[in-house]
Length: 65
Image: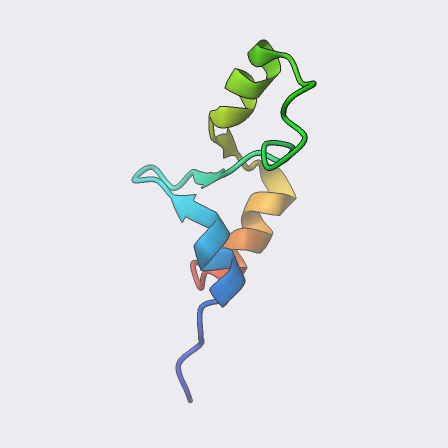
């Protein structure tokens, strides 16, 4: 049986912590930042953690069971 390949897009976008949490970058922080409040931009800078079915799906793409 051949080895299962890791999904290239997923490995660039998600990181798994030591405890198994899946961390991602938040959306809405790429452009059009001039009119967004500083408070919102600071909040968007912090990484988000995936929960539930999303986490399960990313773990499958990363080849983690």
